[in-house]
Image (tube, rainbow, N blue to C red; front, side):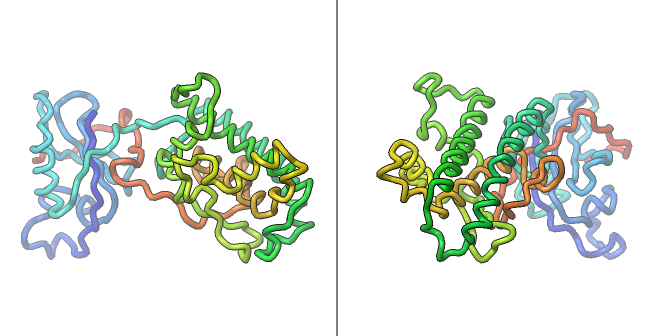
Length: 317
């Protein structure tokens, strides 16, 4: 099923003040209200083309082109019809309605399936075990910028646990999306770094909810596929202190621990969405998202429309 998307700023005037007749046969809300529009082929195969507005996702669509059982119009005809009724918009080819990648959140219409929810439940449960100990550390060592380089054995233990959970999330997402590592079952940061762009991990920025003065945390910013381990300082230090505690205990710093736990929160949010992590039973209140990835028209998921009611309005276009 083909799909096009565009953003519409809306019209500020009423139909009675529309001397050019731009509103044509469409209901007032089709042109008056701003928002995203999706233009899709009729899933019943009639050759018709429908329009759905994100502000009326649960209502019936609007008929843009009537097919009468003929083959669907070509793309140029669809784009011409869009331009006729929404002058000046830039429509782009969008994802197939209902298409999504497992455990990859991409905007408002990302909804995990039952199997994904079960696995996310396990991931959130495991994260909460770690977070209980993390909260105790923050009661012992104030998360103030002047304490960033504080280090110790408990910080090392939690740093190892947090990074292990991050690795688990990386691998699980790749496996669920049928990614095959060149090394077989052995995954490395060369594989994990492929998630950087797929999930826009560099764009995520969070703060510690109760300690905003610590500042913003963007643990994946600067992740370089050419240096997939060393370009994440907290992850590189985790590897060093994990394998050689006597030499590298000083690398188990409060800053590295906070970055790794923030990275774990982001990996959960990048799978389930930040809204899911704000509601029980999945709620994690330790971190507050300050900046989220912005998904463009071509990348954001489109809601499924197979069960949508067919337009009851007269033939148009």
